[in-house]
Image 1: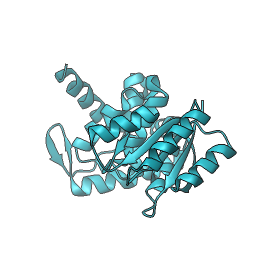
Image 2: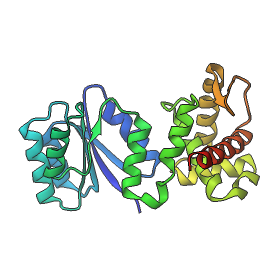
Image 3: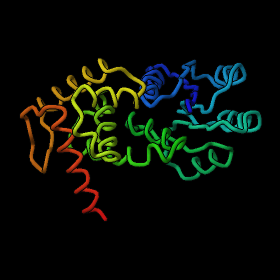
Length: 233
């Protein structure tokens, strides 16, 4: 099922960056001004499954907005992005009807994966762990190819025969799962991995600068992820 998100965009265009990343997970996204009245107007115009907005200053108007959304749109999942980790503020937002709060600063991939998991826990149950695994090994999470690499490892864990596919089949499989195209997957992985190996990534505990072919890299990282998971049991 395809879910639709309304995303408030602030002056730094962070909302648009989130919206573009959500599209990789198969979401339909609409960006609008982050003003609460504009968000409410858009929610009334068409059906949305979730709303992500920036609440930099958590005032009574924010609480009122969430209460109103909960009353009008009982199905709506509400994700305020805040700058405080105050238990009191978070509890009040949750009591008003927020699904959960995103605390700045945040990692873009982490927010998208967490919300994707909230909608489809069975589908994305392992993705946050894979993303953390790659981030710890210095793969650049701000680049598009990072998400495709996550998907490649996730697919290999689901189906070990995936690693026997040709590179073309691997890219096409990732593209289908991530709502993209073969060309985008191949290009994004190539650019991200060239950047990553130039700066150095950690593979099997060693800093590696030698460029490894994409298919071989997915195989190595999948095996390392399995060993890492077993060690954490």
